[in-house]
Length: 486
Ligand SMILES: *Cc1c(COP(=O)(O)O)cnc(C)c1O
Image (tube, rainbow, N blue to C red; front, top):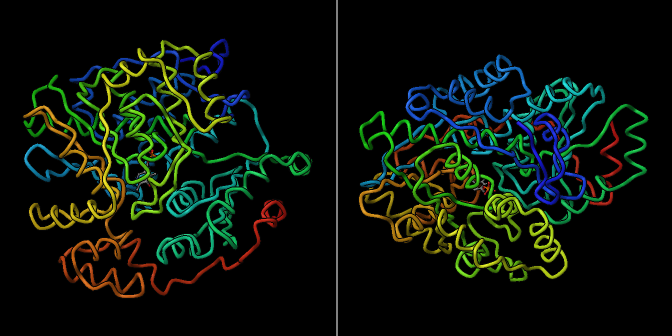
C-alpha cells in the first residue's frame, strides 16, 4: 500500500516511511492511496487481536504479517485485561464502546501501545540505527499513555513535559511514578502552551539536532497526526459492529451510527476509514464541547479557529485546530492536494478557511455534528447514572448528549465511543451527581466509589502512596537543554 501527502499527491512513500517520518516535508499528512476492503462476515467473527491483524495488514502491507499478528497479540490481549473493544448497552439503541480498559485507562492506549512497535520495526526495515528521542508536551492523558507505550522499547528514549499545576493530581502521579529505564518526566513552570512551545522550539533547533546527530540520535514526536497512531483506531469500529451482530441486535449489513467525542479529529476519522473499507456506517456524529469549532464547520463550511478558547470539564476536547480534518478534506475533495494546501495556508495565515460547496455536501453525507457545554454534560452524567445505571466521564457524556440530539434515524443503533474512565475525573463526576466534592483526588475517588458502589481501576487507586521517581521542575527555556541529558 502506498501513502501520499495531503498537500502533494505526486509523492509516494511506504507505510514504514510514513510512520518513521510522521509528517510530510511540505507539512502535509500521510494518507493511504487506497482503502483495503474487508470481508464483513469474516471480520465480525474474529477476536480483537485477529481483527487488529487483519486491519493492520491491509494498510501496512510492507510489514511482515506475522510481526503484525504478534504485535496485536502483545498489545490487545492480556494488556487490556481481555476487555479490548468492550461494548455495553446503555439505553434502547445506544451503546457505549468502552475504550478505557488499557494500561493507563485512556483510549489513547489503543494507538500508543502499538505505535512504538511499528516505529521500531520501521527503523529496522529502513536501516535506521540511530536512537529515537521522543519529546512530548502534555496536558495529561497523552503523556502517560506515551510513557507506558514507549517504556523499555529498544532504540527509543522518551521525555515528557507537563505544566506544573496544569494536570489533576492523579494524572501527575501517573507520570511521576512511571517505570522504565528510557523514560524521563519534567514539570514545566507555566501552562500547557508554555510546555508545548518549549518542545516545538527544541524540535526546530538546528544546533540541537546537530548535537543529537553527533551522538547518533534524532528527535521524533508521538503526535496524533502520525499514521501509526490512526490505523489502530480503525479496528474497534469493526469490532463493535461485530458484537452487535453477534448479540443479534442487528443483522449483518445493517447500518450503525457512531458518535465520537472529538478533539483532534483522529478517532472519528478512523471510523470514516472503516466505512471506506466496507463497514456499514450510517452517520459519524462529531461531538464537541463548548470549543465547538467543528460543529460550526459542519453547519457552514467555514472552519474558523479565531475564537475564544474555553477550558472545560472535558479537557481532551479543548482544541481549536483539529489537525486530522485535513485528511478528510483530501479524500472527499477527490484527492485534490492543491486545494488542501491552499486551505491549510489560509488557516495558517488568517485562522480560517471555507471549503467549496460540493466538498461540504460530501462531508455532510457522512457526518453529523453537535455540541454540549459543561452544564449539559453534567446533567447527562446524572441522567445516565439515574436512568440507565451507567457511570460515564465528562467526555463520554458530551457524546451521549449529542447522540440523543442529532436527529437519528429511528431504530438505527448508535455506538458512543467512551474515551475515558469516569475515575480519571472523579471530582467533575461527583459534582455532576450532586455530591459534595472533597479536596484531594484520592478522597474524591473514594467518595465516587462509595456513592455509586462502583470500583475504581486498580491502576488509578494504586497510585496513592506510590514512590515518585520524577520531581524535577524546570523553566520552559530549559527544555532544549534537558532534552540532551542522558
Ligand atoms: C484524545 C481524547 C479525545 C479526542 O480524540 P481525538 O482523536 O483527538 O479527536 C477524546 N476524549 C479523550 C478522553 C481523549 O483523551
